[in-house]
View 1: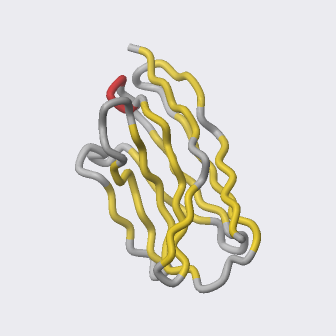
View 2 (view 1 turned 135 degrees about the horizontal axis):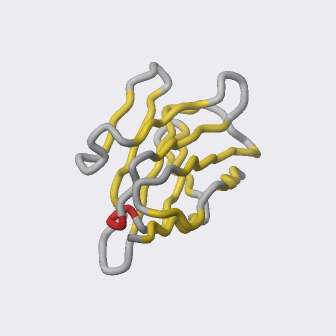
Length: 115
């Protein structure tokens, strides 16, 4: 089994910053990539950022250079640095891990940006 634990969410004012962390434990073998998704009420889950093991990163169109995804060099952990947060960024954020085509998800962490 693989378990993902997220941390770092919370309440922040518009224009502020937050750093989300995700750490994987368990049978973590054959990592293809990791990422972050988010879902707000009434909307589908959408990609925020993804990172392949070759270093290639991808971001949702709405990010517009405000966020950065990175990973720990030795641990199965990755991060999402979010800057210039907007009220539209309010959502539950989920970390994702892809192991040889199988996706694993964290339980989600709330990020609330007050106007």
